[in-house]
Length: 211
Image (cartoon, rainbow, N blue to C red):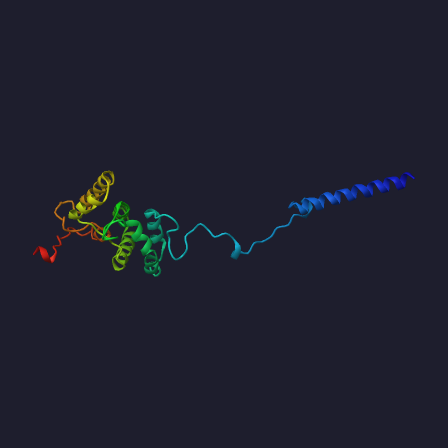
């Protein structure tokens, strides 16, 4: 009698344990003794936060990040990389809210010039040549937007006072670095001007109407 009673009690206990285990599984839980690892194919994994090959700008333009991406890109792929990023680059570095749209560099565009200037000034020979190559492609794809001293009046009319003060201050800093003699008001400051910085002196460029 005692033996049968113990056997029956054990069976009931085992049955209750199995029901609890099944209940946990149905609610989404997994018994500790049956934990397994599932390999998720790369095709269904969440996309990485790194930019796609078609462009380096995922959300907001960052000229320091863009510069590093340009320097990391080999010269064979450099033209296509620059061309792919042209629309976003122009939108981010030129004035878009007044006509002519995209004609003049905005404050971010000036900051980009200043950053390139600092990099090329302190670079070794190899890096300087790479920067010059990058700028030459910018020229080819119409991405070296410039601004003359006389164009500042246009910017002043189209922006608020605080923005214009910051703009003119940075413009003057870049201008003084590129043209220390102060006699090149007819020559626009741009990335192209930075690549010519290493020449002794930039000759004043006159428009045909000025002659």
